[in-house]
Length: 326
Image 1 (cartoon, rainbow, N blue to C red):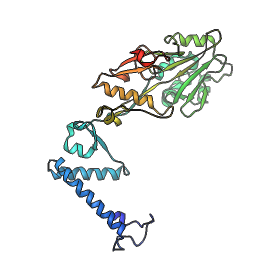
Image 2: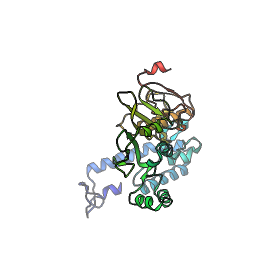
Image 3: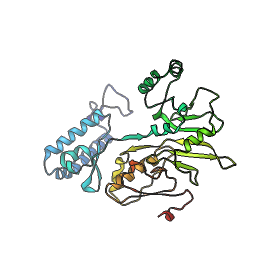
Image 4: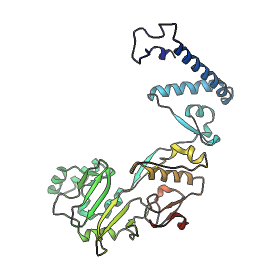
């Protein structure tokens, strides 16, 4: 309260602060009275919650205040499993009922970029690397001429790749998260051939009516473009990534209520990612079924991605209505 009084009413610092310029204005007095009333109203139920152990309440309050200062005003939240995952102060929950605290798991981004690179013809793999240190080791193992050329051009870090495009008669490219498109070969003469497309399609499953194929146990999707002769003339390999435990932050909406949850967002904002994590979280305690006509949640292969946990996955054609798949 005193800190508030030390600010002038226009928001700027004032040499003669309000605390020293008493009597206070009626507006400041009302604010102080309301603040005190709210604190008094909260004190009694908090005492009862703390089993009349004032030391626990004081310790939780002190820790919460210290955390707020060290985290720049951010608050540490928790979920009380004994009260339908109700939102609570994590500091108070740990002081009172540690056993009923929902444990957040570390958020881990996972992907299988190596499997995607393995689909490509060997000469198109050279620019890819998992990280810069490994890229340098790869360059050191190359013959002198190839190593010199590779050092003149930075490697493509796989974690930044969104998709890889191979269209017949055109140079193979990849798109990065930044939106930049990069050629997979320095040679302008190196274009995608029918042999390249055959090399890739032989390693994936059949293409369905939606012109997509997948890889067992991954989230990567391969989309095909057909020519008039109904032969594949181009491929787009889109890298799929999972973020484990991404739905822990909404566990109160998932496990603390029977209401439906609608996820809205722009393309690429992470809707599918959080739905996948939400399904895995629910499957730990409930029978969970995923109905996905686009096969983006569990992947387009016969074997679903491991991030789904124990869910049952119904995959189907794009034109099928969900109720026909059950």
